[in-house]
Length: 211
Image (cartoon, rainbow, N blue to C red):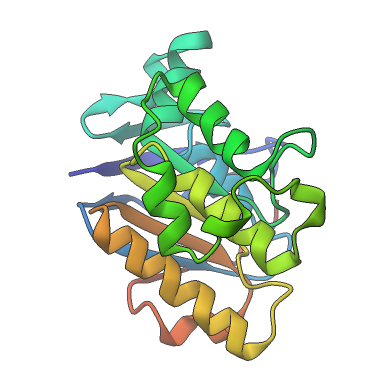
């Protein structure tokens, strides 16, 4: 199994405990976590991605217990094994497109070998030297996807990737994420409230608890 999350409990307030259903996914598997705003979807994504330690339970990625690691060791492990696509693009405005990907490689201790092919696959190779402030919303999102994939992660996590897109572009982004996950044999998990995504991924978890 590539991703295992078992017996996970989390709460901000002990009167409102939140239990995550067990998740066990192998290379190429896809999962949709769907629920209304405020239902805890992003909290789950952060726990699975090594950003938020649960109160109990264990998250394993490729056999490694994520929360047995800490500090720089956890940061490097996450950088190598987890690609996160945030709702708002997390790219550095002081750097151009290519530099944003190179810095992701640097912190994970990885080579730059995937930068050129990824930018070509995503249709933004001609923007590689462009300042990110000059990019369209769609181009910035593709840079975020490239950055998430540039270290060939075992797990790809996407937080509301279609929230601000029209129907055609929402459809294109989901298909693009699925295509890239399949190509790199990664687990793909999408968290969203967007009902349009339901038809794309049959494996689904519905989240209803409030956090």
